[in-house]
Image 1 (cartoon, one colour):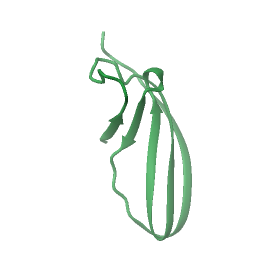
Image 2 (image 1 turned 90 degrees about the vertical axis):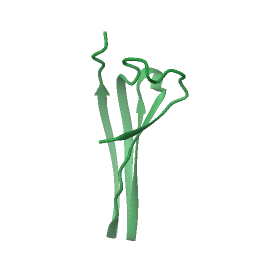
Image 3 (image 1 turned 120 degrees about the vertical axis):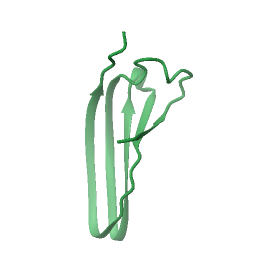
Length: 77
């Protein structure tokens, strides 16, 4: 899985910079043709936004909303 990482921090490549707790939401809407979006916020001082890079298409009639939570831990010393 690949993620787009957005942050106002200067040194996002520092070891362990993405470590922390993340919470997010996802939503999908379909009326004949549809689309969806996912977004997670967290990390050091809630300074990171993670967007999974994915492509999806769907047809039919559907509404879906979800909440997710996970932890990233650093192995950097």
